[in-house]
Length: 90
Image 1 (cartoon, one colour):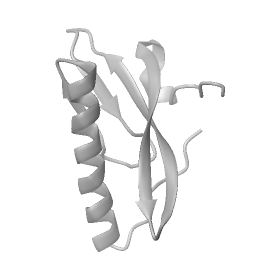
Image 2: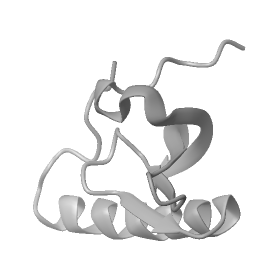
Image 3: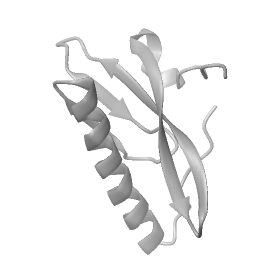
Image 4: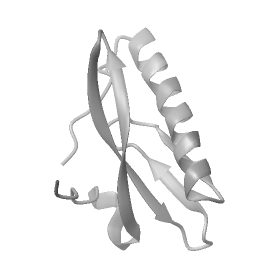
């Protein structure tokens, strides 16, 4: 499987993609998670398909755990507000 291109706003800081699995109504969908380090070495994780789901931590594992929690919160708020849960990403 080919690694997707990073979202445009990540610029040259792109490092790798992981996957976040969204489950709704019995259907599962894998969503990309972008991981990169900022200029101070902090690991940043974000799921571009879920607006607002971004987090940071000292380690990659902590950042992934944090962004999963952030994504759950964003999905809850978007569902309660009647907003689309995800947006299309390039």
